[in-house]
Image (cartoon, rainbow, N blue to C red; front, side, top):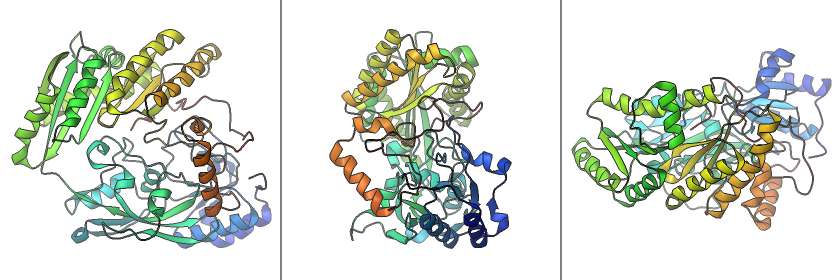
Amino acid sequence: MDTLRRPDAAFLRRLEALVGAPSLLTAAADRWAYGYDNSRRHAAPDAVVLAADAGQVRDVVRLCNAHRVALTARGRGTGTTGASVPLRGGIVLSLERMDRIVRVDPDNRVLVAQPGATNRAVQEAAAAHGFFWPPDPTSAAFCTLGGNLACNAAGPRAVKYGTPRENTLGLRAVTGAGAELSAGVYTTKGVVGYDLTRLLIGSEGTLAIITEATLKLTPLPEARRTLRAVYADMHAAARAVARIMAQPVIPCALEFMDGRAIRMIRDYAGIALPEAAGALLMVEVDGTEAAMEHAVAAVQRAAAGPGLIESRAARDAAEVSELWRARKALSPALRTVAPKKINEDVVVPVSRIADLIGGLERLSAEHGVTIVNFGHAGNGNIHVNLLVDPDDPAQMAAARPCLERVFALVLELGGTLSGEHGVGLEKRDYIARELGPVALDLMRRIRAQFDPNGILNPDKTLPADGAAEPAAHTDPPNAQGAPGASSER
């Protein structure tokens, strides 16, 4: 990657000839907005291309490859790991204009779309035919399909329906060498060749740029029911999660908040919850209307047990909204109390959730750092929030060793350092703790096969091989700095 060059005037003239002047942004004010994502990282690109179609993507990649100019693909910038921040300058290739729903094929339960389509647009197009696409990140109204695929973003429904990797049949893409690639199938079964579709999903634009996706749709459920259970402590709640996930009725959402999160929303939003509440579970089940009574009863039986303080099932839409109000109040409360919190997205086996929360409580006490936890309990995906101010050197002096210990704890419990936010820049230098040298070497060689000149999203996803790499600035991992922006999924 040391051979990468900044684009010169001659390069920019050739680029303009490829895409047209209206699709090339070079003014500083225009470029600035494309230099950030929903982390506190920022680095302005030298130019921005607003691609109109797959042919333009191919041509721009080929030009950048020939001139060794860094190229970073971008959707709407809702990611939290700095993955779309152009650290080497170069070109940002925005796919926002490639937002077409190409077709919906209800007979085969398939939807084909371009990467710039928002998650909401995909859901609305599918819903018109009685279907949905399961991935549902919190930023669904704004985030793009390409971004969802790039970091395998999931959301609450993943506990029952899986992530983009389980719900994408095939992709069209352009490799870092400018070769057009068709991967995967249009059918729900197929084993010809290696699974390049699943390889590209989650690769954060470091191997190829996705230009079209064939999505596997799921029929919309006839009915949904919502329950809330409050426990004396997180250990009781974690035991309930294990019981709920062990019985046949799989929830379509199983969310949790720890005691600190409960106290925060009680103080911030005045929501009535039992004073003794040490943990809270939000559970939703879906399916046929005829099965709902049985499903609710089965989940309530599993949720019952030592430490249960209160259990409620919503009877109508108003009660559903009331039960969810506590969970929805958490993100605004966190933004108010700690607008620059450090937010980490980790996963542990469901059976080890209580061990993780207990360990985090000990780390909080040892380091003097307030830690608030919530997330997708059904698959052990926990959002760990360190409430510190990254602009305060004293607080960061305490937070950094605490964060190191958080990652160590997650790995000790058999977990992984990222569940749905991706790696990007923020976690790049930590993943060698999880992946062995053989795996990392194979990944670097795979990357070189797709992108021999290292132009695609340089400095992201994989740690440097024995050499330090530049960063846009020295903010800590996932220090959230955009007031009003939500990074939780």
